[in-house]
Length: 115
Length: 113
Image (cartoon, rainbow over all chains, first blue to last red; front, side, top):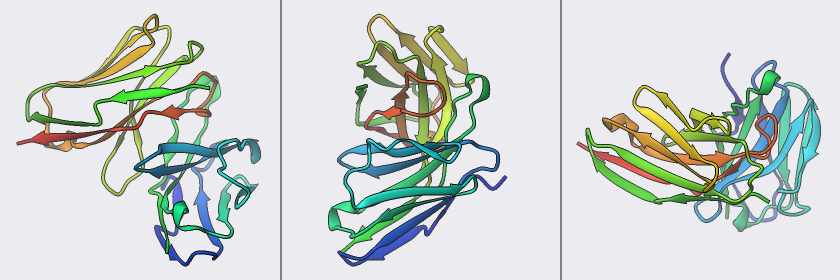
């Protein structure tokens, strides 16, 4: 398997524009997570899905952020409108945890810069 | 909720020496403690994990210890090599599966040749 695939790898956008980040989890994994990484706040869990259903979105910073998982092989994280403070590296991760196995596999991340 | 503190934030050791990174957690219900390694430009990757029914786990040059009473766990890397240079994250979870993993702030480890 190619692992978790995220696109784009880098995104530069102007403040106020809509940004969509994409993620393809590892085939067969039933949990998907979106994390945000910044120097100040480290790795923060934004939202996670189990079997395509959002389970906990308490980490989503505000209503400008939304995430969807229309099927088992695709998820999006959207920011509308974007602001400079949204600049960060956004990671998608997936896992499959039968019998308590818990490893989360991370993608390469999307580096977002909002100017 | 869970809070994970990690120290030190940066660590520099001579090649061949040992490195130790320490984490504390706040939620006594946490029962799963993984360590991730993040290389430049890549996502974090699991290197070792420990569950609360185990006090120590070793995998070649890497070991993790857990003290549930004190709510702290540590990563030990022996015989360090240049390829060990990376950012290391500890994390804690109290649920099944990888959800609700709360990460520490990370430790930037540099191995000096």
